Image 1: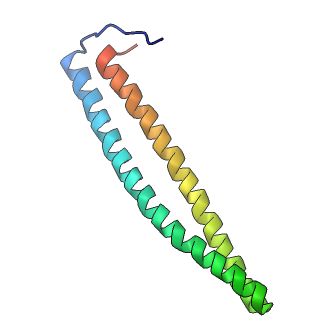
Image 2: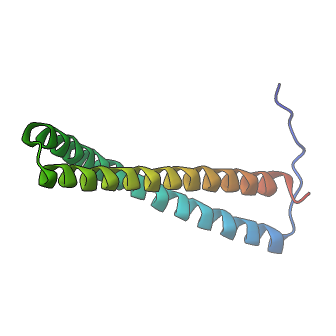
Image 3: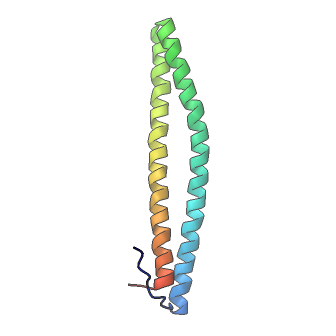
Length: 109
């Protein structure tokens, strides 16, 4: 069940501040989503490299091939951690944007 909140008009100065913060949050959200799209594309390539080096390490059974796989695997893991941090940041920005929208419509409090 959705509760409708009364629309309370903000004073012009407070409204301008909220609108500016909302615009900033939106811009940051757009940049973060763009960054996530780029990171996802890069992650596909890094995962393919990690898979290739894993197969080479299995076939070659040499220390060099094993080391290459370890490095590629660490790189993929680091990118996954970076991706998760970015996803968390996007979720936080979305929450902030929602809070600001609520403030803009309902007012402070």
